[in-house]
Length: 152
Image (cartoon, rainbow, N blue to C red; front, side, top):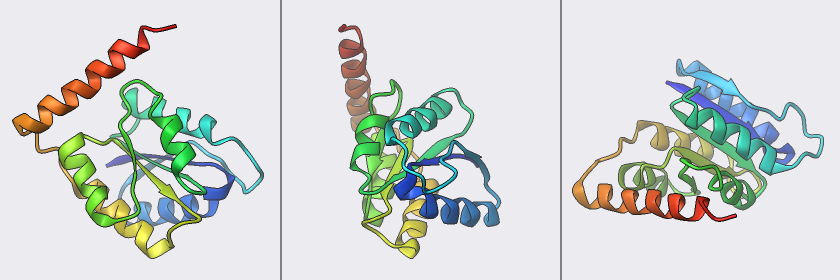
C-alpha cells in the first residue's frame, strides 16, 4: 500500500520510526515532511498529507503532531479528508470501517512507539464496510462538507 506520512517538529521522530516500520512491512512511503525537529507549523503538513491523499498519491495518510489535535483539526479542513485522532486500537480500525477515515492522526507526546505501530496496523488493515447505515452517514458528512465549502 502507498502511505502518505507527515508530521510537524513534535511528531518528527515518531514519523521517522513509523515510516521505517511501514517500509519493512513492504509499504511504499510518500513522506511530506518535516525533516527535522526544528519548529514548523502543523497545518502545513496536514495540508500536504491531505492533498496527497485526495490526489491519489497514496491510499491513506498518517499525520503526527504533539497531541494530534491540531493536525486533526487542520487535516479535516481539506475537502475529502476524513481524519481521525486515534490513541486506541478500536478507533483506529472502526474509523475506517464505519466512517471511511482516510487519515490517521497520532499524538507523539501522548502515545509511545509500540502503540503507534499497533494503531497504524489496525488503520491499514481495516476496510470500509459500506453497509447502508455507514454509507448514509458518510454521505451526510460529504454533504456537510459541500454545503459549507460554498461559504466565503
